[in-house]
Image (tube, rainbow, N blue to C red; front, side, top):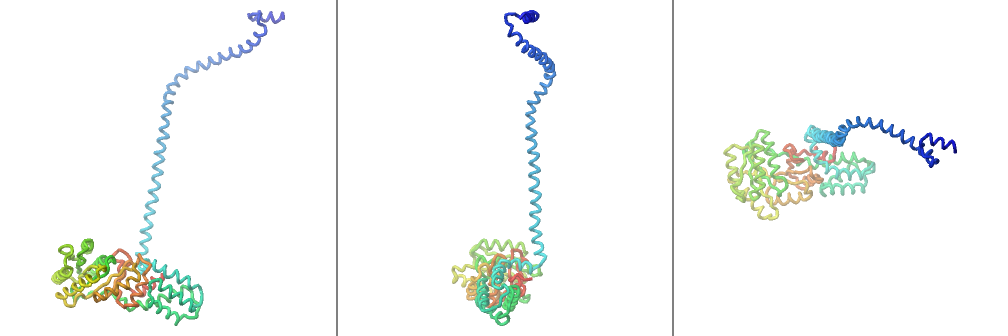
Length: 408
């Protein structure tokens, strides 16, 4: 106790609180050194004051958020740029894909145009013949396949009979069958593959173009006109479907494009026979080589249409008793067997001298040409497999038959 009192006196503390002083000194000593260390950080605080202006930009540095905003726009352009770069190459392949077909010539375009008809015919043939003998069951299946492909009953039976005579009882492959089919079809088409010859001595050679509305009469006239011009002939177009303003306007546009002489009606619904008479008279005076006469195709009133066509023929014969020199019936291949009925109807109206079959590229019924050849024997002058003038060409039996079967 005496030592404790002595210690407290030396410390200057109140002796009445002996137990507490020892504890505070221990606590006071650390806090007292703490202020001095705190004081030294405070002197650095003045330098912290200069950072305060830096801190002001630092709050502005949240304006560093603009960098993040600036970065997205910078990143956006590179993201937008890659899409355009692939687009040009994506567009480039289509022209490259078309070029080889164009380079391959007419047969390549014909074969491509008949692709749908080929698939319809050859897929079934391939299914029938997989290295099996050509027995009666196989021949029956083959005949059904040909009829379904719009070759017609008569032509299908003729082809099957040819198989029966030459291949019956033999083991055949689908490729052998396709090759033989092409030969049999070419034999049917051969006699009707005759071009439409323009005779200069008749100048102008009058071609009366007939057919149902929508079969492609106007565009066929335009394509033929361009080909005649390329051959050095002077052509004229007569807008004989006077009740259809669209047909008149379309033919006028084609006349301007092809450089053909255009003969429009005086007014909508004008007499087609009178227009044909005036056009032929003028064509003779101007020395045209060929005159293509468009006509109406309103089969819903067959009697009126028949009378109109007969009147046109009757009137133009007052100028040239041998006219028309050709009557071209335009058929749409997409109508299939309905084309057979159209040949019958127009054959009753006028003396059809030849056929033009259009839109083969949009149809799986290209076999109808075989049916027409077998049933009517009318010349097939031209076939069309596209919109361009060069996509309408003279009919070639061998090429058509092989193209129909997908053979080279």
